[in-house]
Amino acid sequence: MVRKSLGEPIAEDLRFVVKSVVGEENFVDMQPNRSNNFCCGGGGGFLQSGYPEARREYGKLKFRQIVETGADYCITPCHNCHAQIHDVCEHFGGHYHSVHLWTLICLSMGMLGENERTYLGPDLAKFGL
Picture 1 (spheres, one colour):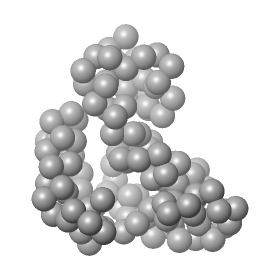
Picture 2 (picture 1 turned 30 degrees about the horizontal axis):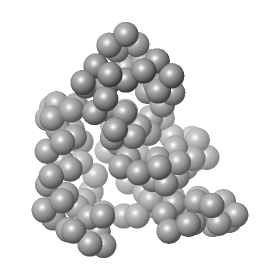
Picture 3 (picture 1 turned 120 degrees about the horizontal axis):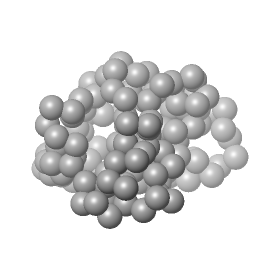
């Protein structure tokens, strides 16, 4: 959405939402970012293509980018990104949690159900229950 179409304005809107949900002090940006960010490697049907090793090799760049932030969570906007980022974390031995943006929005509003907390770490799994 940011890299291939709507560019910097939507990147800033997404940053506003994320910072509002997690707190600006908890926001860690990737480098490079916004329109210059790297693709996760799971979109465009690649996640379902049947070539997991090629997909993971491509996703290694994104994995390294996430790890370099030192963040405990990687917030993902879509199910393809979430599945790919979660998979490369497990495959390459990462230590971050991948979580949908909508999960954090619902959590911040106090309306995330117990069965929707699968990808939250122990610090957030019981939050708001």
